[in-house]
Image (cartoon, rainbow over all chains, first blue to last red; front, top):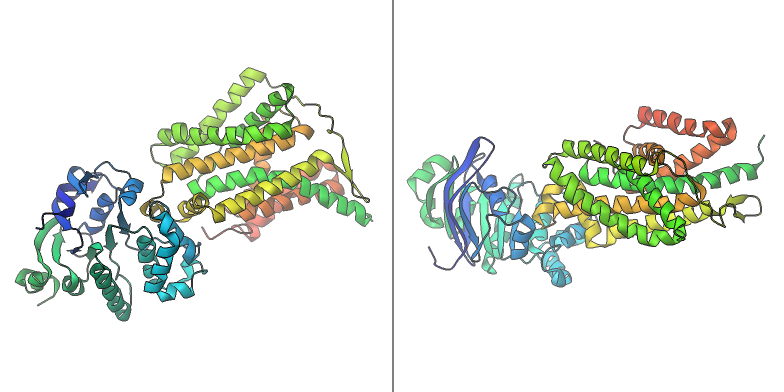
Amino acid sequence: MPDAALLEVDGLAAGYGASAILQGIDLHVAAGETVAVLGSNGVGKTTLNKVLSGILRPRAGSIRFNGRSLEHAAPSKIVEMGLVHVPEGRRIFPDMSVDENLVLGSYRRAKANRAANRERVMAIFPRLAERCRQPAGTLSGGEQQMLAIGRGLMAEPRFLILDEPSLGLSPLLVEEMFMLIRRLGAEGLTILLVEQNVVQSLALAAHAHVLENGRIVLSGKGEELMSDPRLQKSYLGM
Amino acid sequence: MLAPDILLAAVLNGLMTGAVYALVAVGLTLVYGVLHIINFAHGAILSAAMFAAYFASLAGVDPYIALIGLAPLFFAAGYAAQRLIISPASHGDDQNVLLVTLGLSIVIENVLLTAFHSDTRSIDVPYGFASVDLGFAFLPLPRVVAFAVACVVSAALWIGLHHTDTGKAIRAVAKERYGATLVGIDVAHVYAVTFGIGAACLAIAACLLLPSYYVNPRVGEAYVLVAFTVVVFGGMGSVPGALIGGLMIGVIESLTGLFFGESLGQLGIFVLFIVMLLLRPTGLFGARA
């Protein structure tokens, strides 16, 4: 583990009502690193993201971001600190224009750089520029995903959580999406990539963790995990 | 056969009344759109605002001047009521919000009853019976002022909702609460601001109504019943729906009154309301449920 961890999660447990979803999660992400959390549906990936972004309170354990404790922080405070979560299912504002969606991305953070960041997002996603006045709900699935990420980037995140960014996209767009994530990582952004798409995610993650039944069952460097027989057996069908 | 200028005068009169309906309805529809509940305290808050304007007038402050102070005061009261009473008492469950507002309305109404009894009061202003001569018709001055102010307030609200960050945040929370939370919008704050705007609109409506209307502890209820019709008519949660719906309902009421007699004016509203529910249950601007 690198010692300058931006995000440190230790012994984290969380759940809803009587059901415990996450147990004993340890997760360290260093600044500038892309870390993948992998697992199939229902293993607790989204729950983990909800806890990190303050939507759900942890039952046990600690979360430290940039040295500050997050267990009791409100979601708006967490965004203010620069931890931005691009959720599964995009959650864009459907009846507002693409531009308005981007403006709201900078509601809490980086307001002063709004115009410059909009230019930057439009340069990354030229298709959004073409549709900037269109209601976001009329965009295609791929464009909506771009908008969701673009909205996240408007806050100048120090740490970006991407929850299933490739879900529901055509194979060509999935390819494009992973190229984009690689590019953002190369620009120095710290990324927590939460995915079901194991091969593509391992190819670009420095470290990866495999989540099963709410626990991390396998951790390691991206390329090491790729050749790990346990992972190959359960996820790659080899 | 009616002369066209009588018809036109009736339509204009209807628009004047309708603008105030719109103002009362806009707060109701905004709260519905954002919190997805009917604010049952809306009528009681209107009554309270009318009493506030009434006592301001007794103290020598003209209702149109009192408006400048009462709008922010009621905004603050609405904000605080949502933050300190409605939200904590509903424990995060939307259905409880509905019950809490119902409870709040009972409390407000009975406080007003205890303090001021059920007497109907009105104020005397020098311009109470003044009118504006349009050549073919006379329009009562208080109604013309009410219309103009309601239009300005609606326009300001529209601009605020579309061109300020707070307005955009309100619209974002209305349609996508989870996404709004994740961009850092404080949803509890937005709820309270929405309640505050609703209450401020009522304070303005109260000041506009008072010069030509009466006040008693239940006066708000009658207005809110019509406003609720406007909200459904225009489409639940739609601000333009409430504005256009309010004007239309005002005209319909006025025309029904013209053709069937003043006391049957509201009959037209409810007949049209039923027809609307049968033919287009989502209202003029309503989205699918």
